[in-house]
Length: 156
Image (cartoon, rainbow, N blue to C red):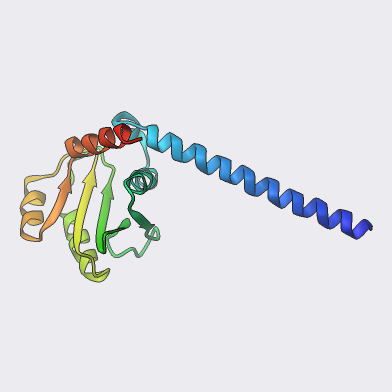
C-alpha cells in the first residue's frame, strides 16, 4: 500500500508539472501573438524566431524551427499547400546585408524548399536587395513585418 501511495504521489506530481508547462506555453504564445513591433525590437534572435513561429501557425502553416547551430542558413521551415518555404529571421538593430540572403538561398537548396524569405524588423541594404532579386529570395522588411503583425491581430 505504501508503495502505491508513493507511486500515485509521483504520478500526480508529473501531471501537475505537465499542466503547469502547458499553461506557461499558452501564456508565452499569447504574449508573442500580442506583441507589436516595439516588443519585436527588444526580442532576442531566438524570441523573434518563436514570435514568427506562433504567427505563421496562426495562419495555418506547419512550422519547424531549425536547431540553433548548423541550421544551414534557415531558422524556420514553413509548410502549407504542399509548398516548403525556408525562412531566415534577422531581428537586428542595423540594416540587413547580403549574408542573410546568401544563407537563405543556400538553405532553400539544402532543404529542397520552394522559396526563401528573409524577415527583419529593420531594412535591407541595396546590395541585399539586388542579390535577393537575382536569387528569387523574398525580403520582408520592417514595413512588411508590421503589416504581417497587424493582419495577424485582425485575424484573431
